[in-house]
Length: 543
Image (cartoon, rainbow, N blue to C red; front, side, top):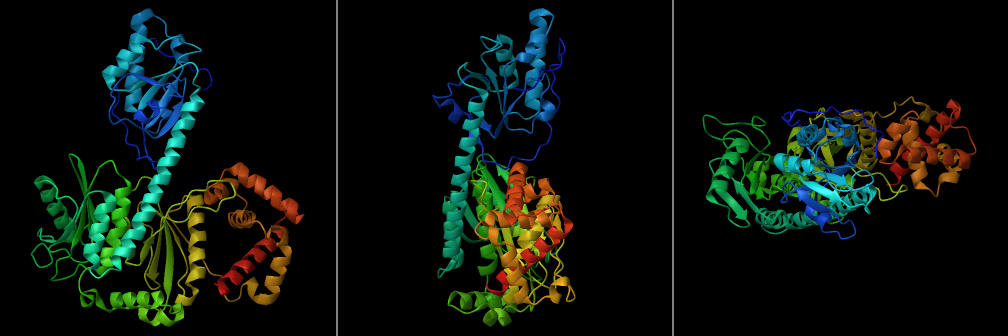
C-alpha cells in the first residue's frame, strides 16, 4: 500500500469530469469473471455491472484522488484508509464516496477492489450505492487475500492470454503463407483468413462488386458498410472522382453492433483501373484479428491481379522468391529484384497506433514486408524481442518517420549483404526505442575509419582473445554491445534489451569482473567497442 494519504475533503462533487482519452493498453484483457471464478482468491462482486468487464492491470492506492496515477483499464485496490479522514458523519461520507466513485470511473478504471481488514470489517454501504450509481464494478477482497495475490493472478492471466495470442498469430501467419502458395492463392488466403479471424472476408471493388469472399455471410447492414469502406480505400479507377496512387487512405474501419469492419487497400491503384480492397468483419473484442488481417493484406497485394498488371518489378520479385525456394543463392536472384541496393527496415508499432502492416507497407512503398512473431523475454538471460515488422525497400527510396511506428533503418546494401544490414537495422531499432526517437539510421563507417588500419584477420584474432571470457555467454556480449553503443546509459540499455536496469548493472559488473578491467576507462571502452565491431564484421562475412 502507498504512504498515508493527504486529508480528503469532507465532501466531493458528484459530477465526474469527462473521461480522458488514453491509448488502448497493449496487453490482452482479463475478464473480471475469470478472477471471480478463482476459489483461491475468494473475490466477490457486490456492485456495478457484471457483463463485459475486462481488467488490464492492477493498481493499489490509498489516496483520496488516485486519478492522476491511473492509465485506464485497472482494477483499483484500496483498503479504505483514506475514509478515516472524512469528518461530518454519514452525509459527508456518502458525498465523499460518490465523488470518489465518479472520479475513478472518469479515470477509466475497470473495477474497484475493496479490501476487508485491516481498516474495515465490511465494505461501506455508501460505497456500494455509489458504485451502483456510477456503473463501477465493486469487488470485495476478503481478509485472507493480500492485494499482491490479486495482482499476481491478473498478470498470470495476462501472460497466459498473451501466449495464446502469440501462438494464434504465429499459426495464422503460417496458414496464410501456405495458402498463398496454392493454385488459387487469393481464394485460399481469404478462406484461411476467415478461419483465423473467425469472421467474414471479401475482396471488393470500389463499386461493391465482390471478387471473392469466405466465412459466414454477414447481415445486409454489415455488407453495405463493407461496400462503403471499399469505396473509401479503393478509389474509383475510371470515374470523375478517381483516386490514384496514394491519394486515398490505405485502410479504414467502421464499427457496427457485434462486428468490427476493417478495409485495406491492396497495392496497385492507378489510372483507369479499380483497386481491390480486402474487407474483414470480425468480433470487435478480438484485437489479434486486426494484425492477422494486416498480414493477409500484404500477401493479397502481391497475388491479386495478373502478373502483367503488377508490372515487371512485382513479376521479378515473384521469380526471385521462387528461385530462392528451389535453392538458388541470394547473389543469383539479385538481378531479378531490379534495384541494385536494398534497405532493411525494422519497425515496432507504438502502443497508441492502430495502423496496419498493409498501411506501413504502402507508406514505405514496398510490398516486401514480413510481420514477425513478437517475443518477450521469459528470463533475464533471454534474447531481446524481435521487431514487429521487417521490410525490404529499394535503396534509392527515401525512408521517413511514420506516425505510430518506431523505425530502425540500415544503410542501402547489395543483396548479398542483406543479412548484415538486417542486424544493423535491428541495432538501429533498439537505439530508436531506447531514445524514444521515431527513426534511427545505421551509419556505415567510411573507408578511412580506424578499422581500415588493421587487417580483418588481426582484428578478429584480437577481438576473440580480448572477449574470450564472454564467449560462452551471448547475453553478456549483447548487453556489453548495447551498453557501449548507448554511451553507458543504464536506462536506455534496459529499454533496448527489454530487461530491468538492475539486471543491466549486474551484467556490466559481471563483465568487468570476467574481463578484469575498468569499464569506466574511456580507453578500455574504445578497445572493447573495436573488438565487438570486429566480431560483427566477421559474423557478416560468414552468414
